[in-house]
Length: 122
Image (cartoon, rainbow, N blue to C red; front, side, top):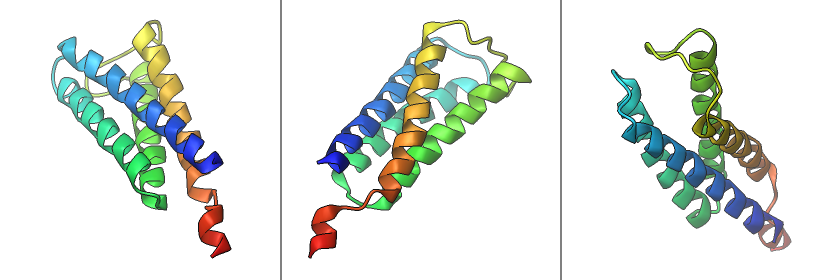
C-alpha cells in the first residue's frame, strides 16, 4: 500500500514538473533553453507513466535523476547562469518547479529502497 501511494506521489510530482516545463516552453525562451524545456516536459510524462506501470527500481532511479538534473540546471541558472539564461527565483513556475523536483528526488530515492512486501513474502 505504501509503495503504491508513493508511486502516485512521485508520478504526480513528475507530471507537475512536466507541466511547469511545458508552460515555460510556451514562453519562447531563446536559444537551446526552449527545446530543453520541451524535452523535460516529455521526459517527465514518460517517467510518470513508467513509475506507475513498471514496478522496478529503474523508473524510480529515473525519477530521482530527472529531479536532480532539472533542479541542478535551475540552480545553475539562478546563480551563475545556464545556456545564456539567468533566473531569479521570483515566479510561480520557479516555485512549483523546485517543489516538484525536490519531491521527485526524495520520492524516487524512497521508491528505490522500499521493499515490495508481496514479493518478499513469496
